Amino acid sequence: TLRRCIILDPLMEYRDAAPFDDLDNMIDHLQRYRVFRVSTWDVSTFPLLCRITQAVTDCTLVVEEAQRILPPHTDLVPEFAELVYRGRHTRTSLVIVSQRPTTVHIAARSQWTRLVTFCQSESADVKWIQSVSGLDVEPAALPPLEYFDITPRGFERKRLAVARRRETIS
Image (cartoon, rainbow, N blue to C red; front, side):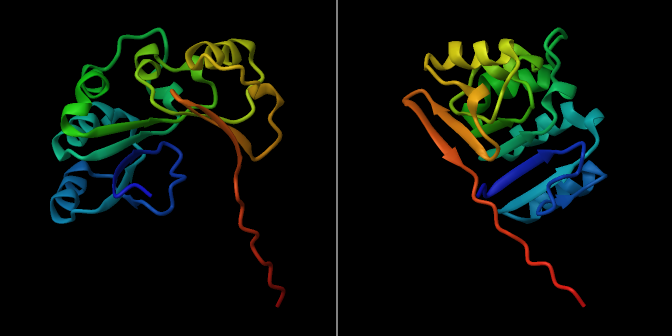
């Protein structure tokens, strides 16, 4: 679990993060607590969110639906480029989440240290994953809940552990 995490979550899927509509209120929260998990849904705040992440230091920025925020054929938001290329100086990490990696700006994909991929059937995505990892992985053959955890040292095939929820009937 990440101890200090800021999430751009357009679909508000992260139920365990404190949601903020107002970034001034988020900044107040970040200044008050050493450990935090906060989120916002407003993609228009992305440049400011990048600046906040860098100022906080020792933090992870999660960008959900990255293909919407970092499309491949547009200029990269300068504040995000700063995080990508200089974030290590402030111990800033990035987690980029997308259904299709090739639909995300190359700068966001270029500095990877770990790839987690579930079933991918689009040939451009499969070829990209194989080329950047240098490994003979076949993401198109993965069944539901299985994924490849790829690092520069190799890969592991893993399976999500899903807790079953009990249904109670009254």
